[in-house]
Amino acid sequence: MYAVSMHTPDEVSAEIADLAVNWMPEIEHVYSARSPGEDDVVVVARADGTDEGDGGRTGEGGGVVGFLVASCPSGEPTQIWEHVVAPSHRGHGIGRALLHHLASGAAASGDIVMDPTHQLDPVRLGDYYRSCGFTESEDELRAPAAQVQRRTAPDSGNERQPITTGGQT
Image 1 (cartoon, rainbow, N blue to C red):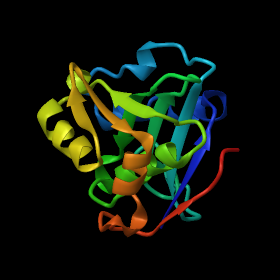
Image 2 (image 1 turned 30 degrees about the vertical axis):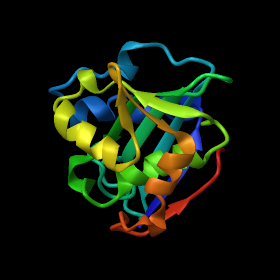
Image 3 (image 1 turned 90 degrees about the vertical axis):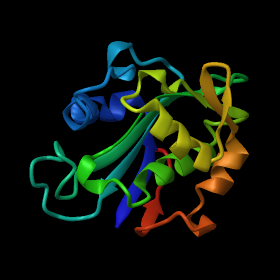
């Protein structure tokens, strides 16, 4: 079971600062190379559990198992900067749950966009994002937030593990 919630960068930056680099050291991480903006949000998935293990550094034992960082400026598309799931938790619907929570939140209105070119395997990730409702537009992937919300919904047939969601704290 996983819990998904939305936060400001200040609330979780220390907790997620090195996770993407530890989970995927072979790719360039756009978010870690830029300063958080006032319109940024972080959607975090945590494994339910009481064993803190290694404090979530590897996504084990009740810690952070995935996160998504996006900028949500008013009147502009929501830009995804990072979308990462711990290797040991991939294939369980966590990435889709993170997208669903972003698309369902008040922060994301209109379109959601992502530049897949900085990813390790942009073709595979392009296929993944297309299955979540995104289409290619110039050098980015783009989708209406409402379409992402529908395509990533728990009852869409894409869910593999129970996911619970919480509001922004």
